[in-house]
Length: 496
Image 1: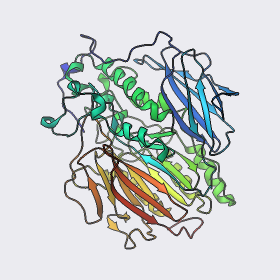
Image 2: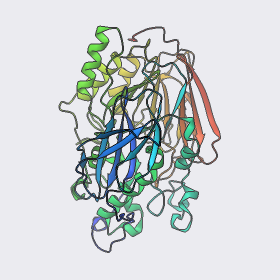
Image 3: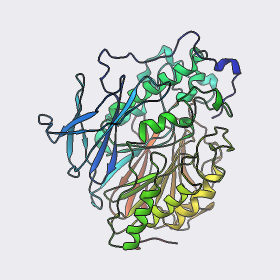
Image 4: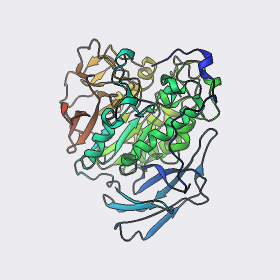
């Protein structure tokens, strides 16, 4: 959502009013913890500190009383305008599907735990959640409706009463194994919506970043949190053509890159017996560019993250793009992302990972109450159809939607019974300061749309042929919509 703003309100550094978290006396104290699936038998641990670490380290083991292994790195990085340093350590050679306990090395840290990734090709059922467009809560965020007249008066109520999705994720922590969040994390660029911030934009942006990732840490430090870029990661505000006014470090996806580039994977080596698939997977690895585009495998799943913001023709956030955010490109060639996607999808062996899911931020199928990304559809939809993607997950529109399997605006005649076209969902109703988007008119191929309360999606791979999608109401846990997609997965490699 774009905002209009007088130039004077973008001034910074007047009366300090940014809601910064307190700096701990021990500046090595870990905060903003996050973990990610890094490789077939590895997990990356990330966290921030208020001073640079010469050697970030993590102790870990399969018993909380015996953290017998230690992994370290030299990754402790920052950027202009940030008060913290981001640290990343990779834990390798983990046993699959095993609970590991870990402690970030500091004089002021505690023990947490995670479940290591399932073996690629493991046929056991599991679930993951899709949470998109999730913002900070409290004085700098979180409302119910997009209509200003219906905004909650956040400072006068307990934030926990208003923020429901993180609470629901915490309460159901055993019901899913990882989270996918393709874009719009925190909404720091919406600092200007809080009047107290109008003369303190630089610090307000930085403070919201620290607040949000601190709020997310209880989830992201326990469950792999797999992210992709959205428009709200681009610049210090979403006002078109104002990037030059942003402070150093608050433009061109800087925090997103610093926070997640070393945490996310590239792509996994092929487990296929096909030499062609192995070659294609090697090409995809060379073309990947995390955290903007990458893939990973987990049990029966091959998951691909794409970048709907930059790095393709007429990309909305790119220089000259419709959003006016003047960001990117991030590939070394104009077609690197699409070349990666084609190589990665071509390498998927359905006898190893039968389910193929793609996640990105901007949808090209949405009800009339939201915006559809035409350039995204032109760039990505032909590849998703060609290689038989089963499910496509998007956000950007602040509500929940499910569509019948569809290609080029035409519903697949087979519906949920072995369609050729992908099943598309929008899971953008998690909650943020901009509120929820009205549904508006629905197309004939729209099967579900909901914008009455905060919500998110849970995807369950039941077996090699059945995948369930549920939309959950964050407040109550109520199942708002449930569907099961059947795919025969009869072909080892899909090209259609």
